[in-house]
Length: 205
Image (cartoon, rainbow, N blue to C red):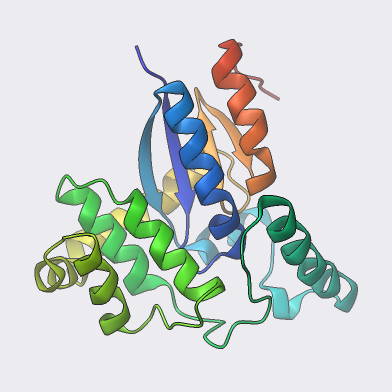
């Protein structure tokens, strides 16, 4: 049977943006399924001990900016290291993705557009009009999806995803989980590729 990967992320994460295209390539290569699980990153960080970039020591803030540019160069992707609309509240965008999943849609192409909206195109993903534009480009019913995205049902899904991420030992985003093994960070996509290719047993603590 095809493997299944749980994909934990939030829409505002630059590392999720940088890993999304490579992840799609790996999933397609192996015919693997994906369970798309947007999370509240603050809820994950609360357990893992991480803090927002602005609260990190200056040396770590500088390293983050270098890493963003280094990864983008390596992956051949555009990036604005300090985009106009960041920090940004990703809740609505995450909820839209959760609503697409709840409606039985494949949101991966839409997600690619939204992640690039922040980190390549200087757009505000907290603005419903921005999200509606990309929903329409993917041929979704923007008004219906946006309405469902703002329900308690969808909020509860994201909250449960966050709990699931913590249970899976995700320390941040993106985290890809295969057979109970968590691969944290866009730079672990290649390790995920290897695990899928070899079919090796999951590595545990």
